[in-house]
Image (cartoon, rainbow, N blue to C red; front, top):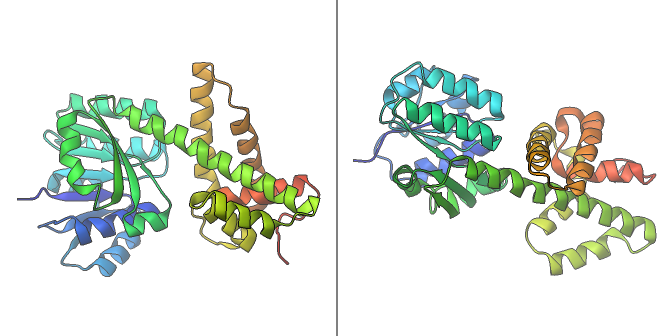
Length: 307
């Protein structure tokens, strides 16, 4: 008999991951859904099928019914708050899986708090955009006790993701350590693309000529972000794919880790400074490729590349 699964937090990533759990997870019980704004749970349940999902009112209800509890929340404070409620109930024998992007110290502290109470804990941040979550093409990073990771892996590769990075029997915080460091690559990639396109425009090469080279040399994420920049998606989108506040949160975590480790990360500091300008210009519409607009402004161009 398959375990009873539940999901806490239904942002862009969470909704896509739930979709694939329901469609490909071989569940024999409805997936339990909880979100602070209940309408998101109701809307997702309606789209996935009321026979395949069950919406609950509180996190307490989640704990009472589920064997494996997935969480995907926006920041460290939200994760801590959810775990505080989880621990109001008997969590012995439950497996708690955190797919949020948080500081490794937060993950390690959660692992200690939950395992002390008899629960199992797996850190499981994921790499990929919301479209990859929706299509089941995420990369799942799993860390924690090997026996706990083994209980989660039937729902990762081939269900929510296309590949696993398995850190079994390592501290759960190693998964979020990789996630935080990995996200600096995404930030720096957008910084490099932004600087390159501005230089191409101002030097006379032209952004389309540069983009043609990017498509040939760096197919994949570089090309995808370059396309979004040139199309103006970086300022036109009402709901960002990688919200500027979340990108800055990740940058703060990385900068903290670098300072404590004595590592030099000048590129990360430049990217974070540009994200601050993005927030100032676009507010909650700010996205990580909106760095392009900030670099354009610094170079004497308009933030927006199209009228």
